[in-house]
Image (cartoon, rainbow, N blue to C red; front, side):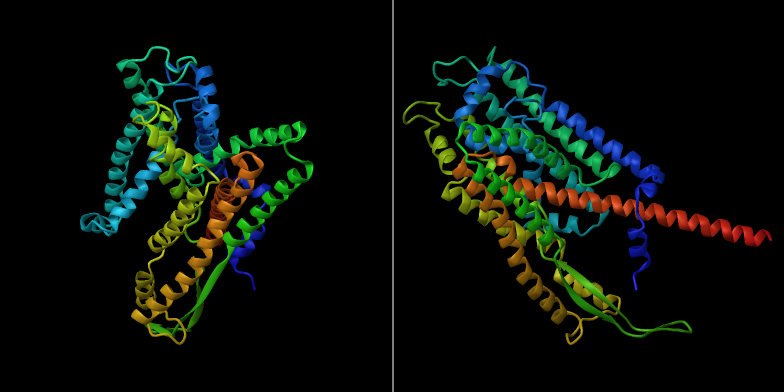
Length: 455
């Protein structure tokens, strides 16, 4: 028999949505915030020769196209949001890694809400440092020598340009960080993930037009175009299947007496998601790949033969999408962060302690250390499958696209982010609708009780 929550979920419709005023306000706030983000991707930083910059960007489009995808086209326009929210994600990675090795940070993590706020503040400070370093490198590279005989990228190079560019880019990143937090608190969905998804979705029309143009020119066959479309649909189906896949562990609760009442034993399930880390591993992997090479991509070719920046150009060449080193490093980072973030989301020892605290146990397994070891064993096995799924979904489509020359906007990572974030956002909308339904039932019950009392 379906539970009350399942029955309510089955009855959700547009009529229930129309009555949920709080949910509609949250959705409108989220859409307004994302609109502000998209407008910011069209505002260029002061002092840039946009046409010259686009011409200089074309030879490096293989690598910077990936950066441009996550920024929603802000890189090719050198907009105020060109750094996007990647410095904040990189800072989050570093802080989470440091929590595992620095005792004081680990102690803050265990302090609850107060400790979490302190760690978030440290993450913001680190974001400023990383964004400043990247913005300074970009500003110096844009006005640096050795750009060839083409027009200058900077209209009026000098200290004022460097200071204004660094201030603008860092301010844009911090504004996006704040905007993401506001979406999470006052809107629906995770703000950071939605900002990244909005940038990717904005590039979809351009990618479709690019693929059709390649077909028109004869550089891409019609059969290959349909094969890429079928591959994209297959990847979406695989993402939905694996993201919803769970391993459920049976949990038994014995009979217990509370006062003079005896409660019967109950059975429940401990759901372990196949991919508990979600879209975090590929996003973290991309941010780490972009962190050391963002400035290198802009500085490529400076210094002449054997010059200061020659080794930076070598890094860009070997870490270009589709190259063997790029694929190997990306897969290794995805697997590492899949295990690392899963261990943060679900701690087997804490889960076992909570089960024992409330009297629950896994049939045939002793509570305590044995239960923690068994949960860790099961979690490790399913995380291996989840990590392989993430690596395959992210890498295989991009290998095919690097051979066909199509856009990265239809890559596995972009589809993974869009589908996963969409599923999470829809789940949150359903949760708000369920809460609204419950509130309506409670109000009706109170009114009926008050009417009966008056009679």
